[in-house]
Every structure is written in C-alpha cells, then in structure tokens.
Amino acid sequence: MIATEQLMILVAGPLRGGTGDDPDQIEANIARMNTAALEVWQAGHLPVVGEWFSIPLIAEAGSTEIGDEVYESIQHPIGVELIGRCDGTLRIGGVSSGADLMVETTRAQHKPVWFSVDEIPPASRSRPPVDAQ
Image (cartoon, rainbow, N blue to C red):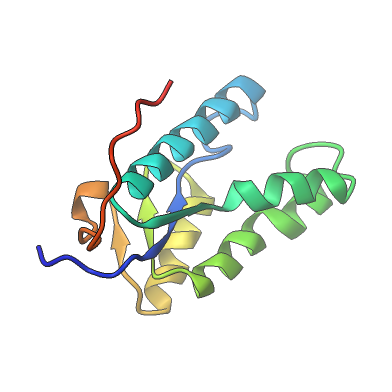
C-alpha cells in the first residue's frame, strides 16, 4: 500500500448491542473501541470515537437511563455528524445497529469503510507503539 496523508477515522462498534444494557458489558465495548482507536493512532491517523462526545453530552442533557429520549436524541446523531467530518469509518466488533448505521452513512457519503486497522492505508508518518494497559 502507498502511504497517505493522515486520515480522521471514526471507530464504530457495538455499544449496547448484545449487552442487555449491562453496564459492565457496555464499558467493555467502549474499551474495545478505545483500543482500536489507539491502533489507528499508532498507524499515524487521527481516531474518533463517537462515545467520546456523546456520553458526556447525554449525561449533561439529563438522561436518566440508557435508551431514554435524551439518549436517543444524541447518541447516534453525534456519530452521523462525525462521519461528515471524517475520512472513513473503521467498523469493529459484533452485532450493532448503531455501528451498522455508521457504516451505511459512511458509504452513502462515498467514503471508505474498513473492518481492520490493517486495511487502512498507512499514514506517511506512523507513531511508535504504546503498550496499552
């Protein structure tokens, strides 16, 4: 692959999918997205995880439970808005209607979707590996 300029890449994966809204499983899903984001960063690109934006806003807006009206008005709309600013989407993990929506939206904008960091064109500059804890 030919090296490319730095890309901004949305990392999309399951948040609630398959968790039964169990907070520990949701936290594990966020950790998997963060790990993928670190891999994107180490490959020389700029990662973005929608939950980095949505979770604090959902809390600030007064959501009282996952899936309530406040949550729904922010969670996926943030991701959709981010796609307009990103160069492509990395889809990770398992079943997720939200992550699938991000893939559909990315493709509708004629932007690439990758299913592995290895599929992403290498950046012209990479970063040294960082051991994740």
